[in-house]
Image (cartoon, rainbow over all chains, first blue to last red; front, side):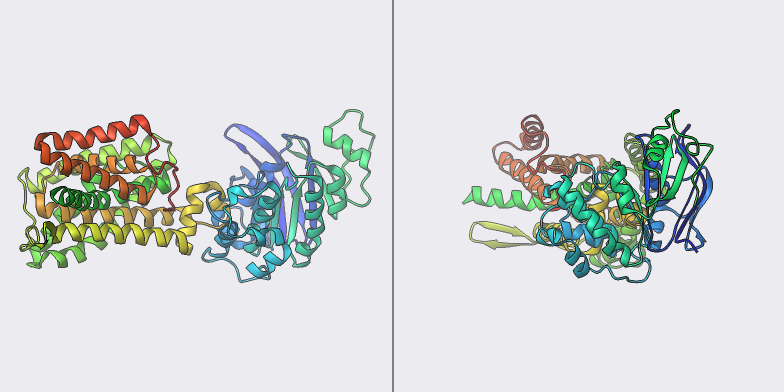
Length: 250
Length: 289
């Protein structure tokens, strides 16, 4: 059974439709990369899965339980947690207080492996700055704190929106080295990444969105990089077997 | 020695202003909501206390023990029914809704209790005082100052050190992300408004021991509370205490020279602060004191 199953999702903002019949599956402990150009609907999809947006049509199920109608705060407690684009820590709280916010939420699922001590072990740079206000942390420290905050909820599904945005390459490398440790705890990760090579390297499967539609999905290891790039840009010069008609399905 | 005593009386008066204003400050700091019915809700608390006293023949402190929790409940209900809805409908809606509520409350009180000023009987609490050399320490004023310190200090501790406080500050920083981290905003805001209204009702009732209460007193209450909040800095609880003190000291010291100019002087202080330092003395809209 999939940890997360998204089926036939239509979503958007007021009269603008951003997603058209998007479906995807995440197995437990699996990392799936979501790639696509700006405006392809990646962030909209994550926001809809996290509950910040109500889908117009379609369903979202967590471990086989339909959660489409669940409000955002309840969804976080049931185990779907978003690390938003731009980190969006609570700036006036210390790094540690940020991490304690989801941990203190009432009615959340059973305790999991991600205690404060475990998180500090994974992110020593956050531990060192635990009593500093989040607004004063560096970009890398903020990103680490944002991921730690999400993990503190002991999620089943972690939604990472552009974690590498605005960070030095060395810092980004360090994050991707941590990913196996996060997966190892049984967390499924849906990863939005601009850098296609990084996305392919970090994930077991890759899903490409174009103008709100899934145009390509496949095993990351065997995916034809050129075909993916073509799907990414919706290029008419895409070789046969890719694009809207010839999806590479696994 | 008289001027020392004047400043002391000003500090006492400031404590009363701060206790009246702390709820206004809290609601703005957490929800960015200006509650124009704040003064009228304080007056409601006073009427409720006098009604309880008359109905059950209990002394003021017993009536207040009943009234303050009811005021908290009223705050909860108002937030869940009216204010929350207004907050979700844009920035001007809370102003319009609370202004309308203010008009409704004043007229309901006029209908129910008439326009006459009612006394709040409290034995000799309003005149009892300790004399210490040239200093006068009135019991009622000391009580209000102590309560102001307890309420503001207690709120600061709660906001800083408890899980509730963390949730309140997180939601104040970024409500959308707070929801995504599992925070349920409605009951959280309801608890904040409950505390704000309870503190206002407590202050209003103790103030009325000296001045009596009448249905339109809320407007005057709101003005002074508002000035304390603005002078201290929007959203800062300790700033509100300081703002109240400055208002009180100005008023008492000037009244030694000329009583009619005392109120004017405190309004001028407010205008000067607005002109010179519009963000207030503790200018950063953070609620952590």
